[in-house]
Length: 234
Ligand SMILES: Cc1cc2nc3c(=O)[nH]c(=O)nc-3n(C[C@H](O)[C@H](O)[C@H](O)COP(=O)(O)OP(=O)(O)OC[C@H]3O[C@@H](n4cnc5c(N)ncnc54)[C@H](O)[C@@H]3O)c2cc1C
Image (cartoon, protein in one colour):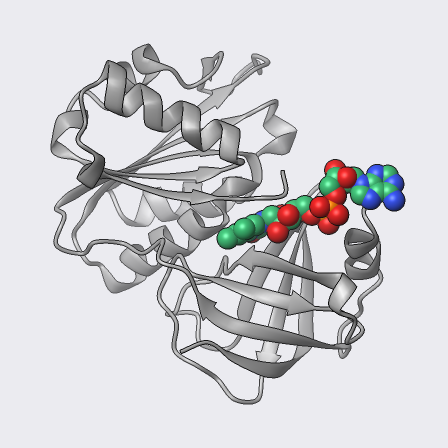
């Protein structure tokens, strides 16, 4: 059952040129599942409310983190002005973008800021050493748009069952990636055992729908093997 609670900004982390993470200290800590989201309200103003995925894992007990792509909106401006110690209201846990721990092999397809709940899920599996085999195919415009790049690289080093394949629109010298967009060919190439996996798709609604169609119509996955989270608003 989601509950509204007071939170205090503990730390702010610049993740890329236009993405920041906000770590919150919560008085009344509630349990949540990796992949769920929260509602955050700034300045106690209902016009400054957004749904944002929790990017931290339930194993990271000292804070709750969300990560926002900053735009020209009033909400982004207000968020960008926050400092450590400031107070916000949040409501959580929300959503069903949750890992099926009975699936031995999973794959994540994501673009841009859609990585946030996937970061939470991967960190949870790695910290708990759950033994699920995970492949992430992560698409971005350029290398500077990749969020949590070092984090994923560290996770895949400590947990060999996590493999990350980057897809970029622009080639980057010295950086291993596929140039282009995620399509059926990229999925076949990066995830040859795709028929054995449960897929988790997250990002802007158009991207999620395009990925779902590729999996269902071109690659023959049944709907029960595809879990989606739409970032309405992009
Ligand atoms: C379940 C769920 C989880 C989500 N998780 C995340 C997450 O983890 N991270 C995340 O970043 N987003 C997430 N989103 C999306 C998020 O809720 C917002 O919809 C999204 O971030 C856009 O909000 P915004 O304040 O940037 O822009 P909006 O206010 O929605 O504006 C949309 C666009 O209009 C432009 N715009 C708005 N006002 C102005 C202005 N005054 N002048 C010029 N341009 C303007 C903005 O630049 C922006 O590009 C999630 C959504 C859902 C539903």
